[in-house]
Image 1 (cartoon, rainbow, N blue to C red):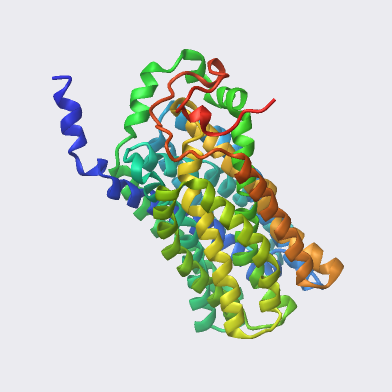
Image 2 (image 1 turned 90 degrees about the vertical axis):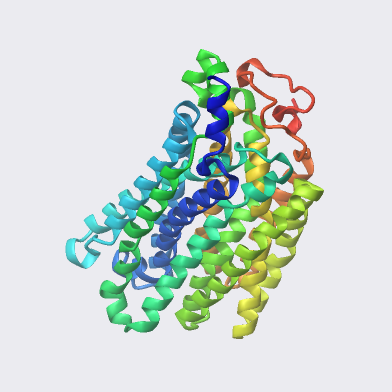
Length: 461
């Protein structure tokens, strides 16, 4: 009886990798739609309705400050939801994060503006943004593990890359919805009520994502490891991850600096740069971002297939070098104010992002043992988001205000790419790591063993 039950369970549709990958992608796309919708609205709507100012750039900077608040909440969400993901399971935690994100985004659609209730309006906006960030903090790690821990080591980068299609798809949907609304109604109508439609749509998307997530099974690795995990790690996996794998957490975070800062410059700040600095139509920036996101969606699985053949590090190193070079070409192309050049600038920038994204899921998963993997992966991912992503639009505006040129922002982005390059050079290749090799608690395993997940990166004094 004990041997036949797992076999019948493995034949259920919801254990197939395509279904699981699709479920993870649907959930991440919904959550990133909600998260990026806020970022796009910060550049177009919130700066006027919630943070009015005589200086448009100052109002936008204040709006982006609340955008950054969402990032600050992400490590908290990573810690709390990562803990529950390692204790209770990946699937249940992902369902909780999706519900939190959907409810908070829908409530933003109902918020009164500064003109209606004064300072209470931005305060409530900040509160809901905190909930968004908290929810997103536990989303990515769980979505990636739901796929990577179900098997097929030879194509782990390919399958683990599916959740990473969520950010460009979510951004594509957010930019697309706002672009359609902006093109079909007057500026006054869009600012009055049109933008609220985009946030209200989140409720429908959450229902779709929730149905898909309820359909999939818990990962076999988690089920197998839970029984063998020591009581101390089972109670506090977050503590075990930080104590035993803090070097891996930091190194993984540093590899994301170029990707994360670049993504928010190429997809979010670019709209501010085009509309408020170059005084170009709003649709130019939104359409350029949509084209770039479409390029990223196609390129991510292609790069992932390559990563399964040649390894994770070559892709990382190439993307980091490209970030350093394109940081300067990007603003040179934008400054031409030519539509074709703008589209090219954004498309290549997001192509570089796609290269990073193709390997992050597999690379991070291969760094940590199963019993602390959710905590370790989530902390590393969101630590980079706070240090690199959250500040990128604010730093970009401040640099332009001080220097008066986009090339100053290019220098900042090149530095972020340089940090990723150094981290990628230091890291060891993880393509051959077996996720089921490591079962010992992190704090009881200070020395890496050959072929284990702990041997994936160097441990230096």
